Length: 115
Image (cartoon, rainbow, N blue to C red; front, side, top):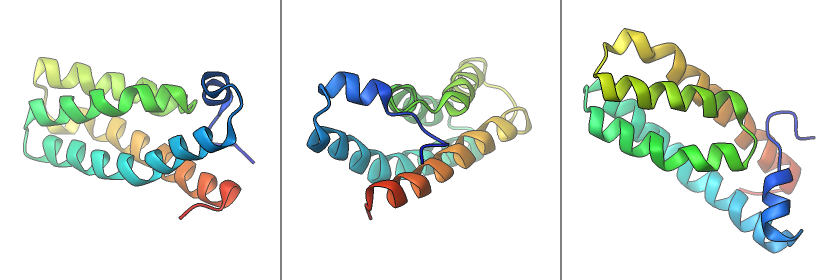
């Protein structure tokens, strides 16, 4: 029922092509969780470059799928990597991104019968 995501930008980009929309959603479901794990590992290891690279990679997807909270928090993660902050400063932002992505994936899988 699209409580945790918004596909208006995806439909606009695709000219309402359902096959294209499904491809975007499938990529989101399969790739973003792996990228999220890379961000988490980068934060844990204080590998700022790794955390930044993967945060920067998923940022446009979060915007495209209307994950506003996750998008705002990913900006915080990017800023944190640039100033090379302490891990405790960014834990809440990471958790917010992770939670919203998990909820969106669960909902998308149900709404579009994807695996």
